[in-house]
Image (cartoon, rainbow, N blue to C red; front, side):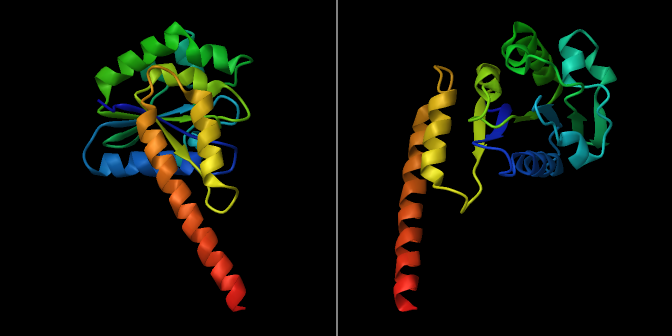
Length: 193
C-alpha cells in the first residue's frame, strides 16, 4: 500500500518541491485527503509554494506539539505541514522513532501523504527518512547530467530492505535506453549541420 511517498532529488534545484506540490494537488483534486509534509529540514520550501507560515511545523510536532497546531488547510482536501524551525540534527530527527510515530498518526488521518525531503547526494536526510515511508519518487532534471548515473547514485544511497529496488532497476533501464536514443538523435542532428 503506497500511502506515504517521499519526493526527493539527487541534487538541489531539480524541482522536487514543485513536483511534490503538483502531485499533492492532483491527488486532492481526485477527492483524496492529502497532506504535504515538508521534511526538507535543510532548505524548506513547501511553505513558500503554498503560502503558509513556517513559524511552527514538523520539527515542533517531533518535539511534542500537537499536529493540529501546525496543520494549514489549503483546500477542502489538501493540508500542509511546513518544516518549522530548522534543527541542528536533521538526519537524526528524521530517522527517529518519534518520526515513525508521527507518520503512523498521520496515516490514520489522510489518504495520501507527500513528503518533500532534502536531496539525496549532499546529505543523508532522505536515506534516514526512507525507513518511515512506503516509497520514494526521485526527481531528476532533464538535460542537467546523465539521468541514469544520478538514479544509480540515489538508489545506492537510499537502498534498504524496505525499498523494492526492482522498480528502480526497471526505471533505470528505461532511462538508459531513452538517454541512448537522445544521444543518437543529437549525434545525427550534429552530423546533419
